[in-house]
Image (tube, rainbow, N blue to C red; front, side):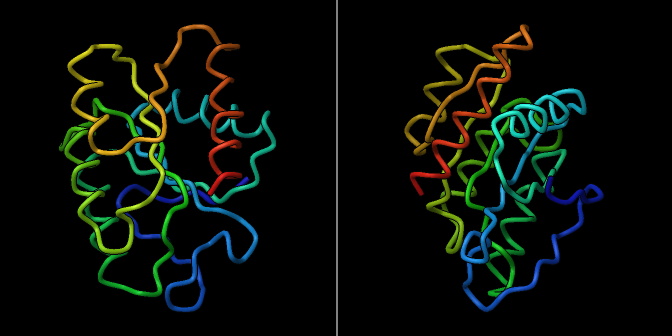
Length: 159
């Protein structure tokens, strides 16, 4: 399912200027998550829900803002259809990444699901005004974590 990348690399997908990946048949999901085990669980949840998508993983907030910057500066770069965003990231917090994303010319309207261990009212209050599609608290139970897949599938279908 999808492609892997090395941390910090910009994805190289071919397409016409301004073309979104889903216009070629497969949406692009940007996963901004520093925990390898959580990335594994996210991939597992998407696979079990039969989400057909390209998956691009970035493991820190600074690289995520650089990804958005590169997308804005290169009209041929793919625009993610959905971002799965952790809040507790190294180098730049998830709410800072979300704020930067919302100011983007090309990615400003992308659907975002916050996927976080935090259930703090303060964290929710920091991201909700920035226009998130959902807030998914990472559960400790495997079956509950797998509920992320159907949520993503529903959001992609509504885009």
